[in-house]
Image (cartoon, rainbow, N blue to C red; front, side, top):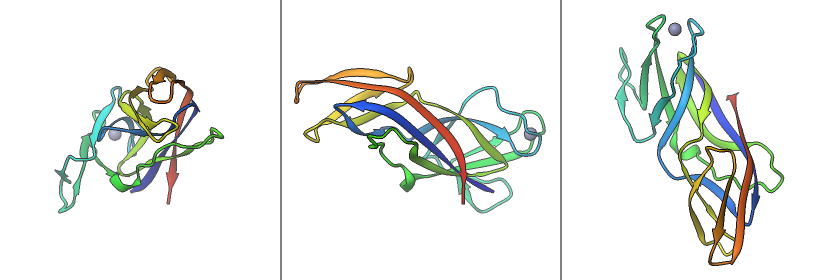
Length: 157
Ligand SMILES: [Zn+2]
């Protein structure tokens, strides 16, 4: 079993505290046994509960490797999700997950995000799939820019 963390970074102008809105994470996994990487993104829902085959435990998603038929499973550590608010554009923790038999390889950043404007007002419907986003904060009369969105996946203890 391994614990992994998605870390992310971005440049932000007139917006802070960017965080994901939904509970679903689209991730490509590598099979720990045969090292095959899935060709499509798996959708891992934090709210989903599935039984782990041959065990009493539950997880968010069970994936059977198409090549070697090995079973793997994933659990998102729900309380680990953190907003991004670093002005220095360093990689910061976004979410932790526990994986058995699988290694997360890629994250598809196609969900919705929300942030905070300069008066702590909510900025909604931010999309980061293009790695940049621009919008307008009506409340503070300010143009918002998010760019250079990037992520990495690291193994943690
Ligand atoms: Zn496999």
